[in-house]
Image 1: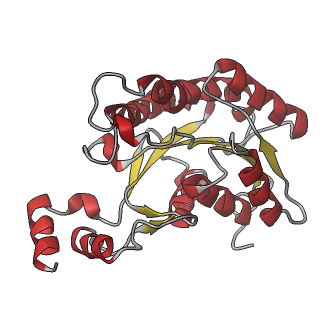
Image 2: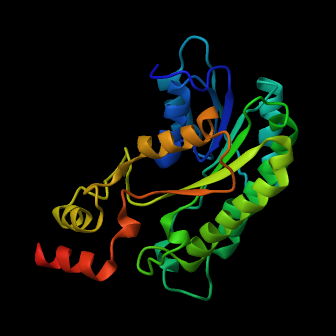
Length: 268
């Protein structure tokens, strides 16, 4: 175990079976928390859980659709039945990107983004409130994206952009609403992230060349690095931090776009 900042805490991570969610689950577990993985991909979630189980901590899988209030209620009831309390809520779940919807204004996938990225976060936060306010160090972290404030028209649909932007405003709203109970609510906005499974964004020479030109740190993040930022926001080290969105992009957002693009072209 790398650290113990979350010893005896219970963390719930939605969309925790793979990608950034799995990175968050691993870091929180390594830093002492028992973790509840909520994901529709039951087999993947159980595989991750089996890889983590050790003495003194629990990893529980709840396969559930949280795009409905009933689904969210089922999750919190299961946490209450199995563990009895909750200290950390990480809202990471998001729909898969439907490439056919990119660039389309009609026939969009707004409904699923609205229900999963926005409404589910509100429902889970409300339902988790009675448990979190009894915690010594309660925290909610929402996983946003750099596309909440910038546009990637060839990579993401408008519902993806708009729902992530709305999630950051919802983060601020919840921070104000829940602050009186000492529940801190923050968000992280990842930039380019290399996932552990499947093809990585930096696997191709072309992508690596662009990344080295536009990202000051000259690489993509790992899911674990996003998980470490989430862990920090859930810890006592961030005890006076709430209502904020922490951008984790290796400095990409501070580069001037035209100059960075010229660098990428000149080095091709």
